[in-house]
Image (cartoon, helix red, strand yellow):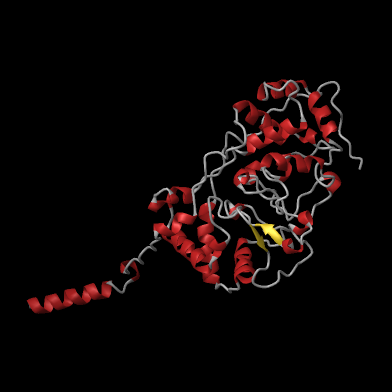
Amino acid sequence: MRIRSLYLLSAILGLGLLLPGCAKKKPEPVIDRASLAMFAPLPEMAPGKEPITEEKVALGRMLYHDPRLSKSQKISCNTCHVLTAYGVDNEPTSEGHQGQRGDRNSPTVYNAAIHFAQFWDGRADDVEEQAKGPVQNPVEMAMPSEKHVVEVLRSIPGYVEAFQKAFPEDKDPVTFDNMARAIGAFERKLMTPSRWDRFLKGDDQALTGEEKAGFLAFMDAGCTACHSGALLGGNMFQRLGSAKPWPDDSDTGRHKVTGNEGDKFLFKVPSLRNIEKTGPYFHDGKVPTLDLAVANMADYQLGRTLSGEEIQSIVTWLKSLTGELPAELIQTPELPASGSATPGPSEAE
């Protein structure tokens, strides 16, 4: 009887191992922390060439949101780089003055201050230099000159006071350069730490098993050849279509800036931070989904065809890079009132 009971118990236990509710849990992927040396957590703030003060940040925040820096007085930095939408407008290309659209996608402003260069073609060294471009671009904000921008700012009493506080050592603080310096100071605070940063700092529970598997798939595919560092990108130029020609060669990338044949189709490698939220993708915004973006990069840059399962796994990990927005910093500020001499809007070309 005892032998029979033991036999029945063994059979029941054996059957239990086959039941769905009793199946063995799949072991969680293990990431060798030595492989993480090529990455880094985000800094709390991007350091600049000069001290970043509360007064500069407050001024830059107002300027970032102020449509009076555009000819029509309808467009601000925040129009195309919407801070509550992860720093983008989710359009292939952004609408500017008189409804015009440029030929390149507007990249996110979040974490941009630690990129090695600005714009897709790297034509600006830092966010301070970058801030000057759109204001005078005839397709974007379309202000006719630096002089006109300064005239507008000097006509607004609240800005005159704010510039004096932000640049107390300047005899004439309301300048075009100081406008850009203030916007840059604000943007240097726009960091979005995520669960990935907690994982890099040693918290193994910050990522799920599926996300860890996705990271290993990302590594195995060879994506780290371009996407590493704190930004997982943003630290080099790369030729679009390294493994096989990119299907659209209408934009020659950095070549437009330098004129060098060797720079044809070179673009700044985008950061993967917040990539889940910042589509559509690539310099022209013509790739609508993250799945397709991953597939295209494997195909055209690495010469690999990833399976649907591999793509989904990588995308699962990429979503762990979605960070926390600095809620208090990005609330729409109250803008200073226009003065009696402040120019009105103009829709003229």
